[in-house]
Length: 290
Length: 284
Figure (tube, rainbow over the protein chains, first blue to last red):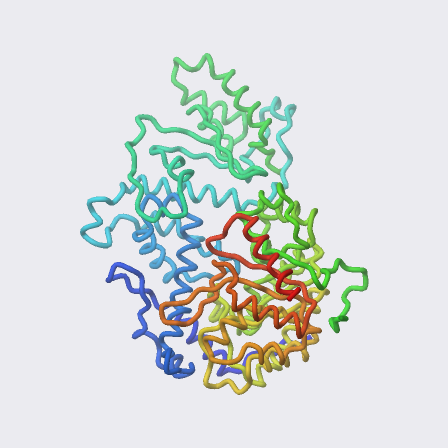
């Protein structure tokens, strides 16, 4: 069946409408407002004016909706980061990112693809001098970004097509395992997961970042049928699972042994057995397809 | 009333009763829906939320589908965009429709993309005869690809074009007639656009062919500081929109009716209560 093309004048009109949507909102006044003087004459002239509502005013509704919808989507995808920075600062980064990378996917949540790298590469320069005093440390921002990215990854992951971990295969030791697609490992230096869990819809200001932990915490997060769960890991368990994701079981154990302090070596076999048992029970590891 | 919609793919298909009441399925209510099994006849899922390989959304959709019929409603088809058709999008939509055995699939009469950028908004087009031809051919193409009834929804809009030569109701009526497809009549959208563009919403309703109406949408709206009304889906349905619904039912009922709520979403019982107002409006 032939699918007819648009008349060229309609396509041109739509291109100009699309460019108008992407005109950034102004921030100088302390709130986001449409920059109606930046709209192209062609699209303004194409729209019906009325006594009560000028064409620019009508177009501004679409312009604002475009940005608010996308900013809200990015806040949803990166809640820890939005809470840590506060929505105002977060939106500043988000708008720069979206101007550089306008959405190309039909699923709104994918508008945030690439945002984590953008923040990791670009975070650091306060937008205004007054921001400098309360700007969170770069490492905390990167950690919050990575945490949100981990949740996104396991939420978007398909059902794993790999074989679940088999007890006999573990005995062989040469099998390659990897983390199931519905789990991720997180190393946490600030209580960012707690901050994430406590976010309320009305929280738009920046959270006060608590003191850094004396020693980092280690977590396994897992998408389950009822949401997300998290499991606290010992540092060596975290290291073992990280290594298993990169190498065979035998190699991972050798490498774990090499980094284990002398005083902990005696308990290492029990720790490995216990860790693998828990992983098998919760479907954390899958056998890597040949 | 009989519908003139085409039968598709031969086998008996799940149908939505003409007097059915449905709710838009939203993520915040997944668990509550499954635990409380509210007394509604069907749910409507946003297609793009489930056109994914991600396990989690599909898990919930499957569980809801086990209890209720599910119709699909899209926001990203881009029927009147230059980039149409996106065959990968259509492949995914067809697979999803087959998965839930959707009684019908709907999307909007608009464009949502230009220059390969997705705008994630429903943007109006000029109402001109040459776009009737284009839209009808494209809608017929989508319906054929789906192998099941497909319907087009009227927009809420804040701009109209100087180049338009047709009224919105004549434009959309001509398209669904020529495409031999369905109409998703959003009564709130009729009200919003009638306010923003100064036309009589009753005239709109009187000029459409209700035998093509697959479903009616109801939703809340807000007033912009400029005085324009914006289709925000974040309030109860306005009384004036219920009044218009009553008129639509009198001249064109019965038709399935579905409540949408997309922002500041209240607990599920509030939505069910709001939906039930349709029963009262029908009885008047």
